[in-house]
Length: 163
Image 1: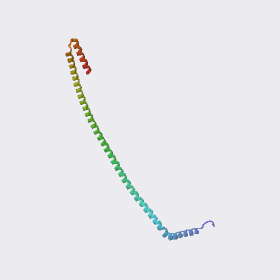
Image 2: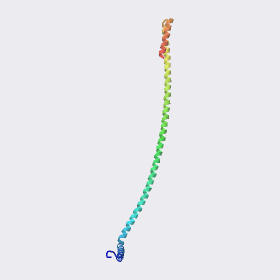
Image 3: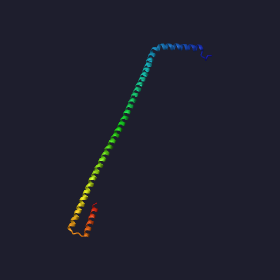
Image 4: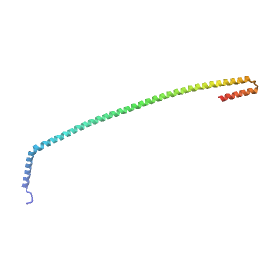
C-alpha cells in the first residue's frame, strides 16, 4: 500500500489547506476586499448610470418621434392648403379667361356688325353712284330701246360684280 495515499494523510492535508486558506484570507482580506468592494460599487454605479441614460435616450426618442409626427402633420396640412389655394387660383384664372373670351367675342361681333353696316353703306353708295352714272349717260345720249336694254344689262352686271 505504499502507492496509495492514506486517509489520515489526506485529512491532514485538507485540514492544513483549510487553515492556510483562512489565515491567508484573514491576512489579505483588508488588502483585497476593499478594492473589490469599490470595483463592485463602481460597476453597479455605471450600470445604474447606463440605465438612467437609456431612460433619457428613450425619452428623447419619444420626443423626437412626436416632433417628427407634428412636422409631418403640419407639412401635410400645408400641402393641402397649397393644393386648395392652387385650385382656387386655377378657378379664378378660368373665370377671368372665360370673361375675357366673352368680351373679345362680343367686341368681335360688334366690329363685324359695324364692318357689315359699313359694307352695306358702301354698297348702297356704290349703287347710287352707279345709278347716277347710268342716269348721266342716259341723259347725255339719246336712248333707243336697244341702247336702253344694254345700259340696264351693264348696270345689272356691275351690281353683280360689286356683290
